[in-house]
Amino acid sequence: MEAEFAIQEKNINFTDWRVDYYKTESFKKIFQLKIIKSITEIVSFGFGKNGDLEDVKNHIFESDNIGLIYVDDKMVGFATTRNYFDIDLCYLHGIVVSTTHKGLGTFLLKKMFLNSEMSLCGFTTQNPAMYLTAKKCTSSLFPDPNFETSEDYVLLGKKLTVDRPGVYQKNMSIKNLYPDCLYEKIPKSNDLNIWSWWNNLVEIDNYGESKDGIVFIGKINY
Image (cartoon, rainbow, N blue to C red; front, side, top):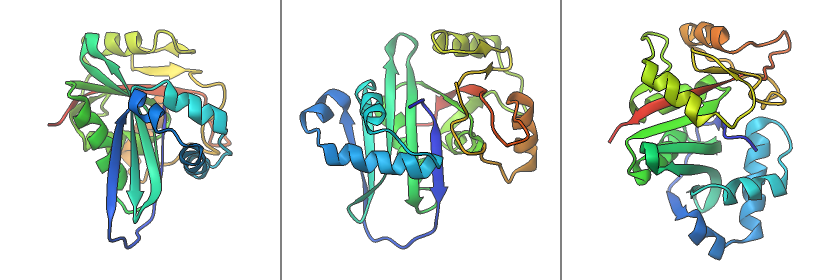
């Protein structure tokens, strides 16, 4: 499972919610198959494709940190991150939130970034909703449709994705980053300016699919 973001927002009433945050090494000690099964179901719902149990397990165990978010004791999402101490960056390995109150995905993402105690964050995505959510957790985030990206960020984005497939572009998009589109269709943004900018970065075919992605880097807002 690639590092990616999927969220299906639905307004619901809830009385109790929490985030359980673990270092992955600690999580392995309390590992339960039913937790992985619950996460796999959330992944399947979020991306509109059947998630693979073993892929989800490997994805989690390859991370450094995991956050599980619950509403009324029912898991509704998870996130994983990796630590890049040499560049003081928290890399979002993956996040999926399903059937949740609007804004809960933002809280989970912010929790993961703040707990890292890093200065910078980074991630790759095909989804404009991920960009808009991450903007709420950062003081700056590039690329940005309204500002030029500094050469430092362009080079850092290349460094972060040097071992990933595809061809890195100076606008921080990556051609053919994914073997297949992660979604049935690339989620469309209701913000027409963002959607127009997104289409300039990611080549979307007539079926609404793409193999391209974008790497984002930002300063965490403490």
